[in-house]
Length: 222
Ligand SMILES: C[S@@+](CC[C@H](N)C(=O)[O-])C[C@H]1O[C@@H](n2cnc3c(N)ncnc32)[C@H](O)[C@@H]1O
Image (tube, rainbow, N blue to C red; front, side):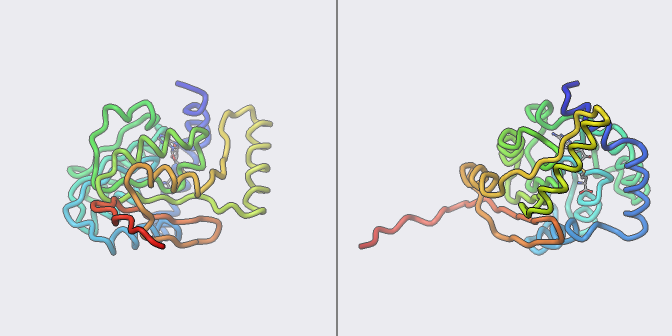
């Protein structure tokens, strides 16, 4: 296990998974997750396959399966979250249509099948190597690629420094990142995707990209 993975296991531990599950059962998806879910469902998820990376307790998986998606695979670096998502999927009647795997997506990417929809809901902010995470994950997406990432506001940067200072004091390798949304979009564009939806929800930016089947031809001007 590398230090990123170790930090994720420590941060997203059994206690955090139990708290997150209780909140999810009480109030449903967090507002930013709901914005992403609504944007995906508006683009038709019927019979689609989903790869949800860093899916936590399985919020996106359950919502899309409930909206008619055929099957989902979840990959999470936290053992506690994978176990919680697996149990919650069964409780909601989705056991036969979900498969939750434990591990760092970057390490598992070669062994994972592509899916029509790929999502990373508040995940890129937990990972140092954003270019590799985005490059490998968008390469798995057939049609839609959905993200929730922190907005680059000064007080989000302030919170980032506070979170990382606390992690250093606790000798945890976990770090929070505010990666450039422009760079993320550039990587998705280089892989044949274009933005089709963007919205803010509190400190979060929701981004949805769609594969460009026939990119518009460039017309000469002048
Ligand atoms: C802040 S939580 C978000 C959970 C859920 N998506 C949500 O929005 O409630 C981030 C999750 O991403 C996972 N994660 C971060 N980087 C990952 C990676 N490279 N591979 C797999 N999981 C990852 C963490 O283990 C954690 O469960």
